[in-house]
Image (cartoon, one colour):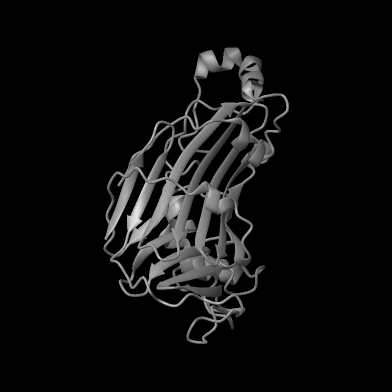
Length: 319
């Protein structure tokens, strides 16, 4: 299998080519049943496990998983129980009636030392070819683990210069200790490919006319991955949107950063899977600007306005 990277002037795209499947398979109907009469969407809900929704799109299986935010400490016993914290620290976590808590199940999966305030650790979107067991997944753990250990660019909150001016003499005497992690939580993430997929350049582009059509929506959902309010100095958040119609599956994963009065950034990954084709096209684009440089009509608090006003600035090529 193959993922192909399209080189363009302002953005990056990937085209994922899977082993061809039958082009004469019967299409799904719009009444929620597959050609064989089986449900296109199945769902499981339990207080003890994440909520999982499965959608069948030809030879592809699309799985949406959602679960609560990961807490900052063990909640296996009562939340106020000192014994619960002590037992977790000693490695002898006490499971409650629902099994181990989200924190205990996932704490060891992270490589990043300082996590965003809100991590939906078990949230994910998985697109898998049933015949080849290969595909792509978007998940919170890989997204968070892609955040750099060093600060991302020379970005400071608006109050930083005022703070420095008021402490000029102290800074001269004692120096300054900068934060040694990316407090903006900017990811380097475009999804997690699994199975036998590879990449190569391509001139393919997203079919914008197809995406503009008002086709009946079979499934729409939003999946949050992580977020942080930057100590009330803005926001840093990453989420997913998926739309499935009879003729295609479309995914938008967006990272949105706003440092109040200072800076905005959008990282967009768009993925298109058309019915009857044996590949997916993935496009990646970066938009960013200092807030004073934005058009006056654009609100820095509205990602859609930012996306419309700014052209992509950078190209990243990674297989």
